[in-house]
Length: 212
Image (cartoon, rainbow, N blue to C red):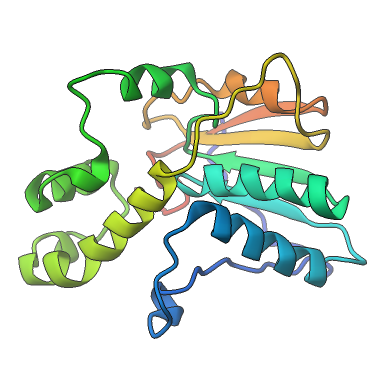
Protein backbone atom coordinates (compact mmCIF):
# COMPACT_ATOMS: atom_id res chain seq x y z
CA UNK A 1 0.00 0.00 0.00
CA UNK A 2 1.25 3.47 -0.82
CA UNK A 3 0.36 7.09 -0.08
CA UNK A 4 1.88 8.16 -3.37
CA UNK A 5 -0.07 9.07 -6.46
CA UNK A 6 2.04 9.24 -9.58
CA UNK A 7 5.40 10.83 -10.20
CA UNK A 8 5.73 13.41 -12.94
CA UNK A 9 6.39 11.64 -16.24
CA UNK A 10 9.76 11.97 -17.87
CA UNK A 11 10.17 14.63 -20.52
CA UNK A 12 10.56 11.73 -22.93
CA UNK A 13 7.01 10.56 -22.15
CA UNK A 14 4.07 12.19 -23.94
CA UNK A 15 0.68 11.88 -22.21
CA UNK A 16 -2.29 11.83 -24.58
CA UNK A 17 -5.87 11.76 -23.28
CA UNK A 18 -8.69 10.06 -25.18
CA UNK A 19 -11.84 12.05 -25.85
CA UNK A 20 -14.59 10.32 -27.82
CA UNK A 21 -16.86 12.20 -30.29
CA UNK A 22 -19.78 13.99 -28.65
CA UNK A 23 -18.05 14.36 -25.29
CA UNK A 24 -16.19 17.14 -23.44
CA UNK A 25 -14.19 19.21 -25.94
CA UNK A 26 -15.87 17.33 -28.83
CA UNK A 27 -19.48 18.06 -27.86
CA UNK A 28 -20.20 19.61 -31.25
CA UNK A 29 -19.61 16.25 -32.93
CA UNK A 30 -22.14 13.44 -33.27
CA UNK A 31 -22.21 11.26 -30.15
CA UNK A 32 -20.46 7.99 -30.93
CA UNK A 33 -22.40 5.11 -29.38
CA UNK A 34 -21.16 1.97 -31.18
CA UNK A 35 -18.58 0.15 -29.06
CA UNK A 36 -16.92 -1.71 -31.94
CA UNK A 37 -16.74 1.53 -33.94
CA UNK A 38 -14.96 3.21 -31.01
CA UNK A 39 -12.44 0.38 -30.85
CA UNK A 40 -11.77 0.59 -34.59
CA UNK A 41 -11.33 4.39 -34.62
CA UNK A 42 -9.08 4.37 -31.56
CA UNK A 43 -6.96 1.55 -32.94
CA UNK A 44 -6.47 3.26 -36.29
CA UNK A 45 -5.43 6.53 -34.65
CA UNK A 46 -3.08 4.88 -32.16
CA UNK A 47 -1.52 2.74 -34.87
CA UNK A 48 -0.87 5.89 -36.89
CA UNK A 49 0.47 8.05 -34.05
CA UNK A 50 2.55 5.30 -32.44
CA UNK A 51 3.76 3.51 -35.54
CA UNK A 52 7.41 4.19 -34.67
CA UNK A 53 7.35 4.54 -30.88
CA UNK A 54 6.47 2.45 -27.81
CA UNK A 55 3.26 3.25 -25.98
CA UNK A 56 1.32 2.28 -22.86
CA UNK A 57 -2.34 2.54 -21.81
CA UNK A 58 -3.91 3.81 -18.60
CA UNK A 59 -7.60 2.92 -18.34
CA UNK A 60 -9.79 4.03 -15.44
CA UNK A 61 -13.14 2.52 -14.48
CA UNK A 62 -15.47 2.29 -17.50
CA UNK A 63 -12.56 2.86 -19.87
CA UNK A 64 -11.08 -0.56 -19.09
CA UNK A 65 -13.26 -2.53 -21.49
CA UNK A 66 -12.55 -0.10 -24.32
CA UNK A 67 -8.84 -0.18 -23.48
CA UNK A 68 -8.60 -3.97 -23.53
CA UNK A 69 -10.54 -4.35 -26.77
CA UNK A 70 -8.40 -1.65 -28.39
CA UNK A 71 -5.20 -3.41 -27.32
CA UNK A 72 -6.55 -6.67 -28.72
CA UNK A 73 -7.59 -5.00 -31.98
CA UNK A 74 -4.18 -3.38 -32.38
CA UNK A 75 -2.51 -6.73 -31.93
CA UNK A 76 -4.76 -8.56 -34.39
CA UNK A 77 -4.97 -5.92 -37.14
CA UNK A 78 -1.81 -3.81 -36.84
CA UNK A 79 0.66 -6.18 -35.18
CA UNK A 80 1.14 -3.58 -32.43
CA UNK A 81 0.75 -3.96 -28.70
CA UNK A 82 1.24 -1.57 -25.77
CA UNK A 83 4.34 -2.11 -23.68
CA UNK A 84 2.24 -1.88 -20.53
CA UNK A 85 -1.40 -1.47 -19.52
CA UNK A 86 -2.57 0.08 -16.25
CA UNK A 87 -6.13 -0.93 -15.35
CA UNK A 88 -7.54 1.35 -12.67
CA UNK A 89 -10.56 0.96 -10.35
CA UNK A 90 -12.33 -1.61 -12.49
CA UNK A 91 -13.26 -5.24 -12.99
CA UNK A 92 -11.57 -7.46 -15.56
CA UNK A 93 -13.41 -7.80 -18.89
CA UNK A 94 -14.14 -11.46 -18.08
CA UNK A 95 -15.08 -10.85 -14.42
CA UNK A 96 -17.18 -13.66 -12.95
CA UNK A 97 -18.73 -11.20 -10.51
CA UNK A 98 -19.98 -9.03 -13.38
CA UNK A 99 -21.26 -12.08 -15.27
CA UNK A 100 -23.24 -13.16 -12.22
CA UNK A 101 -24.67 -9.66 -11.85
CA UNK A 102 -25.76 -9.53 -15.51
CA UNK A 103 -27.47 -12.90 -15.15
CA UNK A 104 -29.45 -11.75 -12.11
CA UNK A 105 -33.09 -11.23 -13.24
CA UNK A 106 -33.43 -8.36 -10.76
CA UNK A 107 -30.39 -6.50 -12.11
CA UNK A 108 -31.02 -3.08 -13.66
CA UNK A 109 -28.35 -1.78 -16.04
CA UNK A 110 -26.96 1.50 -14.65
CA UNK A 111 -27.93 3.50 -17.75
CA UNK A 112 -31.58 2.56 -17.10
CA UNK A 113 -31.65 3.88 -13.53
CA UNK A 114 -33.74 6.94 -12.68
CA UNK A 115 -31.98 10.30 -12.51
CA UNK A 116 -32.20 10.23 -8.73
CA UNK A 117 -30.78 6.72 -8.35
CA UNK A 118 -28.02 7.33 -10.87
CA UNK A 119 -27.03 10.55 -9.11
CA UNK A 120 -26.83 8.64 -5.83
CA UNK A 121 -24.54 6.06 -7.43
CA UNK A 122 -22.28 8.82 -8.74
CA UNK A 123 -22.18 10.49 -5.32
CA UNK A 124 -21.29 7.18 -3.66
CA UNK A 125 -18.27 6.71 -5.94
CA UNK A 126 -16.92 10.15 -5.06
CA UNK A 127 -14.91 12.36 -7.37
CA UNK A 128 -17.82 14.59 -8.44
CA UNK A 129 -18.12 18.00 -6.72
CA UNK A 130 -21.06 18.32 -4.33
CA UNK A 131 -21.95 21.59 -6.06
CA UNK A 132 -22.68 19.65 -9.26
CA UNK A 133 -24.54 16.83 -7.53
CA UNK A 134 -26.89 19.24 -5.79
CA UNK A 135 -27.68 21.17 -8.99
CA UNK A 136 -30.58 19.08 -10.27
CA UNK A 137 -30.99 21.11 -13.45
CA UNK A 138 -27.31 20.74 -14.36
CA UNK A 139 -27.27 17.02 -13.56
CA UNK A 140 -30.44 16.20 -15.50
CA UNK A 141 -29.72 18.32 -18.57
CA UNK A 142 -25.93 18.25 -18.89
CA UNK A 143 -24.16 15.64 -16.78
CA UNK A 144 -26.45 12.60 -16.69
CA UNK A 145 -27.25 12.36 -20.44
CA UNK A 146 -23.56 12.04 -21.33
CA UNK A 147 -22.89 9.77 -18.38
CA UNK A 148 -25.77 7.53 -19.45
CA UNK A 149 -24.37 7.48 -22.97
CA UNK A 150 -21.00 6.26 -21.69
CA UNK A 151 -22.67 3.63 -19.50
CA UNK A 152 -24.78 2.40 -22.40
CA UNK A 153 -21.74 2.33 -24.67
CA UNK A 154 -19.74 0.19 -22.24
CA UNK A 155 -22.71 -2.08 -21.48
CA UNK A 156 -22.99 -2.82 -25.20
CA UNK A 157 -19.61 -4.55 -25.17
CA UNK A 158 -19.69 -8.33 -24.86
CA UNK A 159 -18.18 -10.08 -21.86
CA UNK A 160 -14.85 -11.65 -22.69
CA UNK A 161 -14.57 -15.44 -22.88
CA UNK A 162 -10.94 -16.48 -22.52
CA UNK A 163 -11.34 -20.25 -22.93
CA UNK A 164 -7.95 -20.80 -21.35
CA UNK A 165 -6.14 -18.37 -23.66
CA UNK A 166 -4.14 -15.27 -22.68
CA UNK A 167 -4.85 -12.72 -25.46
CA UNK A 168 -2.07 -10.25 -24.55
CA UNK A 169 1.66 -10.52 -23.91
CA UNK A 170 2.37 -7.07 -22.45
CA UNK A 171 2.86 -6.43 -18.74
CA UNK A 172 -0.23 -5.41 -16.76
CA UNK A 173 -0.64 -3.43 -13.55
CA UNK A 174 -3.91 -3.11 -11.65
CA UNK A 175 -4.25 0.05 -9.56
CA UNK A 176 -7.06 0.65 -7.07
CA UNK A 177 -7.95 2.61 -3.95
CA UNK A 178 -8.12 0.89 -0.59
CA UNK A 179 -11.55 2.44 0.09
CA UNK A 180 -13.08 1.29 -3.20
CA UNK A 181 -14.97 -1.97 -3.72
CA UNK A 182 -12.99 -5.16 -4.30
CA UNK A 183 -12.50 -5.55 -8.07
CA UNK A 184 -10.85 -8.99 -7.85
CA UNK A 185 -7.58 -7.64 -9.32
CA UNK A 186 -5.94 -11.05 -9.76
CA UNK A 187 -8.41 -11.82 -12.55
CA UNK A 188 -6.44 -9.41 -14.75
CA UNK A 189 -3.50 -11.80 -14.72
CA UNK A 190 -5.63 -14.08 -16.93
CA UNK A 191 -5.38 -11.52 -19.75
CA UNK A 192 -1.65 -11.68 -20.38
CA UNK A 193 1.33 -13.97 -20.54
CA UNK A 194 3.42 -10.99 -19.45
CA UNK A 195 4.23 -9.75 -15.97
CA UNK A 196 1.33 -8.91 -13.64
CA UNK A 197 1.42 -6.54 -10.67
CA UNK A 198 -1.10 -5.00 -8.29
CA UNK A 199 -0.84 -1.61 -6.60
CA UNK A 200 -3.14 -0.31 -3.86
CA UNK A 201 -3.22 3.42 -3.10
CA UNK A 202 -4.96 5.39 -0.38
CA UNK A 203 -8.37 6.59 -1.53
CA UNK A 204 -11.61 5.48 -3.11
CA UNK A 205 -12.77 4.96 -6.69
CA UNK A 206 -11.11 8.23 -7.72
CA UNK A 207 -7.95 7.78 -5.65
CA UNK A 208 -6.18 9.99 -8.19
CA UNK A 209 -7.96 12.98 -6.67
CA UNK A 210 -6.39 14.14 -3.43
CA UNK A 211 -9.75 14.80 -1.80
CA UNK A 212 -11.31 11.44 -2.70
